[in-house]
Image 1 (cartoon, one colour):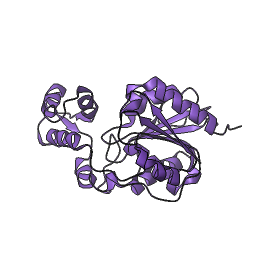
Image 2: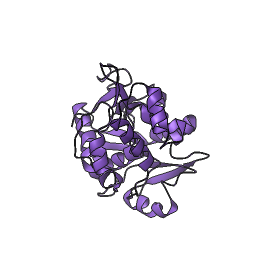
Image 3: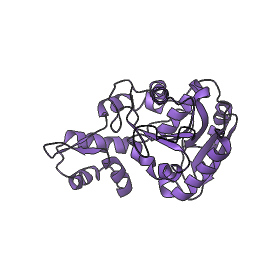
Image 4: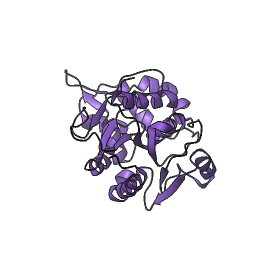
Length: 269
């Protein structure tokens, strides 16, 4: 599948940047390529930064099949289209699982790996309220973002979470709002393939796992499987953060990621 993507300054590899290392940023569930925008801007001075919309998200195509192998294959196809032999992969939540799947299946394409607050395990469904709110939006005629916010507030109390979800709204030529997300596929796969664990041969390249101190997505019991699949990984805990640590403490997270990829990325001549 041909994913929607951007480079920081457009959709073509930038002239004069052919020898700069490339970083690919992969968002999480219900997100889009803009979600890691602060991180992208912090890296663009020294790296070619590719931000992608996963299938069934943002402006990427819709497809019923939605599992980790297919989403990982989409990333590899994008790399092929951009003539990228390898790149640093950075993913948050579901995007972290996709990045791990790429590394486990195609280790030669991954220079190094950064996984933000997710482990290579199967989870129970954890975003029921968000999905309920999005399904409610899909069933109603939405005339304004204010109306949409009021509608989903009965499912989602946190204003920041509602604002994140409402980024998926797009205005039609008639003036109504609809969702960019392919909710049909997400609903069908939500409790099965989208919570599944990435699988494959261990990735022996450098990997950094970032955990929010107050997040339950990476737990002590997950350490053995992380170390089994990513034997050269390191874990860093970001204090006073939860699952959205890159939004809660962007400067700290960005500095940790930059320090890691700077020391783990070979310099091109």
